[in-house]
Length: 299
Image 1 (spheres, one colour):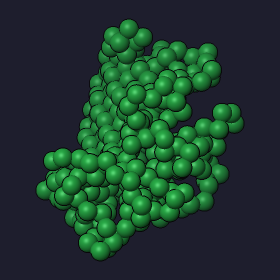
Image 2 (cartoon, rainbow, N blue to C red; image 1 turned 90 degrees about the vertical axis):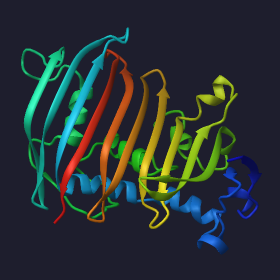
Image 3 (spheres, rainbow, N blue to C red; image 1 turned 135 degrees about the horizontal axis):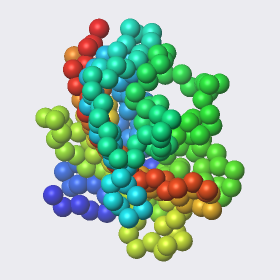
Image 4 (cartoon, rainbow, N blue to C red; image 1 turned 45 degrees about the vertical axis):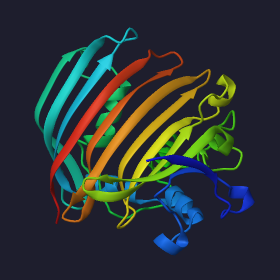
């Protein structure tokens, strides 16, 4: 298919977005029931991706995961493989490992993890202590969550948000990838594809090529690729590339999430992570992570 670069004048001037669309993809109110402006609104306000992750906690399923830790020379220094069952009674959730194998530098002598990355994935995916679960999307801040955790959820589930506040550098504006002052750093592409035998809209936001190093550093979100199911606009595939660097923290991460339907319920089936982070006074941590999710029990 041949792509063409056009300016979409159907948008108000203060929200004008340059979008590359395929010549056989028409995003128009007349043909699809929504305008381009509506499409951007749906992307910014999508809750289906977040709801899929709530289903992950809410419904029982099997898991298999592999986590690898690397040193600064990219040599693997530890690995942790586990499989088991994520249980849920619709009020509480917890996990029980059927097997857990590790090698290398994963644990301290005390039995605690050596690396924060390992702790972080446990907190998100492997809650040994029971945690509350609900399908309700609560927009209110939880008193039990740190600001860092709230920011991480906002960045991960709300593309284009300007609700993340940073104390220095105005970083919140750098996350707002649809704002008029950020559009000069990005290309926005609309196309379509067939994924898992489902017709999908493909929406890609990526940093422009040939930016200066200074301008490139202003675009913390490097790429977001989303497949939207044409039948219901659910996100069923997403790639996410994010980078951030200042005097305190340096991080770079790529995440891929595959979702599908089990008994018409929208759930994640595979999650892949690759990246590193380094905080002042701490050693750099580099890791990759693969999580396969299967045998959901939908009640």
